Image (cartoon, rainbow, N blue to C red; front, top):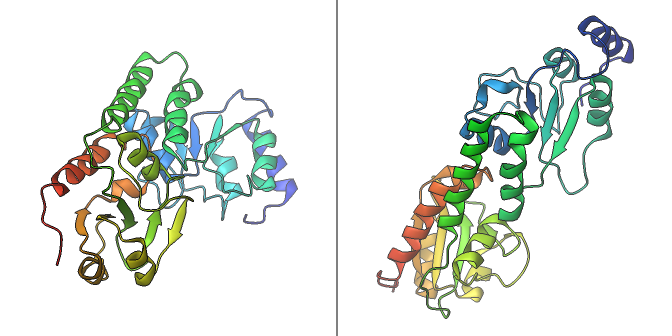
Length: 269
């Protein structure tokens, strides 16, 4: 968190009004995934603060790792929305929120269950009486439900889902894409865990039937893995899938279609 003197914070808060929610406006999002969800809900105009990586015209107020407390005070949000790390929310943010009289709402967004909870709860957090936002949230949830419906799949064919690029970050069963596979009835090549960085030898040992790469970055390792495992390599060139937002439904439909098509593809030799 960037250092801000207590005196300056108090001065700004007094200048803007008392320390209650009176006089506050909108929401500050410290998560690109939450920001994307708010935009998908048609509530992008309610944003008064965002991270440098969020797609929004709202002022930048930093992130959980580098909070700009001065900018957050100037934004004076009614609510602060975060995607907390495993160690929890930084005490500095909670202190600033308390002085602003702002509510802090947090969703870990590791699994589809987390993402659905965020979509269900955001309308009440942002605008409890706005029926359009509530209806849009229902549409987003329905899109995810359709994408996650059970599909016809040979249980002997295990799928390894890996982020495109050189990092080889794989999605285990405890991640949102791992939960998506489970909902569809598609076995994950990783038996347990969340995100795992795999080297090529580990991928070969796993012996997946399908290697599914997610994102637009080139993955130079796929040819070797396909050659050594006879796996079908499927690429879904959609960076939206790397952001656990409530707008995942349409992108997950692309993954579903790619998996269905992989059943008709010839394995690599």
